[in-house]
Amino acid sequence: MDDRPCRRCGSTETRIEVLASGPHYAKEACAGCGNYVRFVPRPDNGDRARRGKSHSDLVSRYSRGFCEMCEILQSRIPNREAMEAHHVIEYRNGGDKERENIWCICTRCHKLIHWLRTYLNHLIPGGQYAVDEDPQVPDREKTMDQLENDLPPW
Image (cartoon, rainbow, N blue to C red; front, side, top):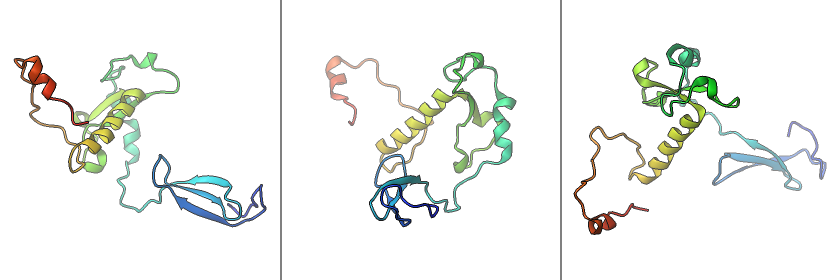
């Protein structure tokens, strides 16, 4: 609590509570009354892949002036969003910064891709998200009765 007293009880002692779910790792609260102080970031254990400074200029180097996913023009992207460089093979999994591995996409599409990766990791047994090299194309000759039996796993 930076040695500042709690506004409720005046205590300078705090406790850290690791959260079981949600977007935050832990919260810091007053030890005396439990008053919320702040959210605590996940400790950096040093094994996280870090991008170099050269990654910040990938959009300016590779952008074609539009999102490569939804094709919105860069000039039409809302103010709070931007063009972002997306690594097709994630940087932490050995993806490089060459053009073949970079998509220049808008913020919305970038968030969608990463949300889908996270969501699909929960659905695939073993939790490893992978893109099939040879995706199976559904049989177009199936009857309606056969299609009704092909329900999704959820």
